[in-house]
Structures are given as structure tokens and as C-alpha cells.
Length: 111
Image (cartoon, rainbow, N blue to C red; front, side, top):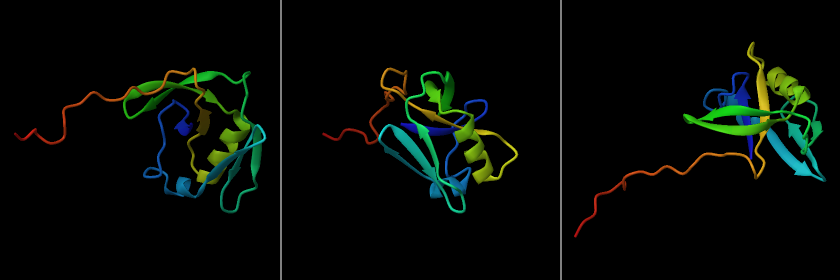
């Protein structure tokens, strides 16, 4: 339900940013907590209806996510130590997500 994206909405993975795998996000009492090595914990409300819904790109699919705000963005950008800006988005149940791929079976059918 959570995704790190670049400022233009493209997803960021641990393959692109290996330090991202050391970040933990927990939810408790309506708040999310971001933690990472040598960083102060960041707590913010999960429900932030005043933050906009942004378009995101995940494996070539366009989806939506609620931006978690500038404070979370600054935390991630500082942690990843990049010149780029990163944002955290949260997917709410009513948002448009990825559709399951309709694909051919991986193995041919044997009779």
C-alpha cells in the first residue's frame, strides 16, 4: 500500500536505490512511522485527505496514490542522499490500482 516515487511519479525500487531496503514503515494508531539507519523516526498521519492524489507509474502501468506530504519527501530525499526528490505515496482502497496481467500460460499444455 506504500510506494516511493520520483518527483515525476515513477516508482523507485531497491534495485535502483539499494538503501531503500533498509527503510521500515510501520502503522500504529492512525500514524505511519518511517525509520532508517542514522535517521530520526518520522511520524505522520496515514489519512491526509488534504494531500493530493498523484499519478504514478508502476511497471508501465498508470495508477494513483495519495502523496504523503513534503515532510516524508524530505525524509526520503535526505536518507537516499540523492540530488533527486523522492516522494512517498499511499494507496487507498478506492484508488485505481494495477490490473492483473492477462497473459499466456507459462508452460504449454500437454495432453
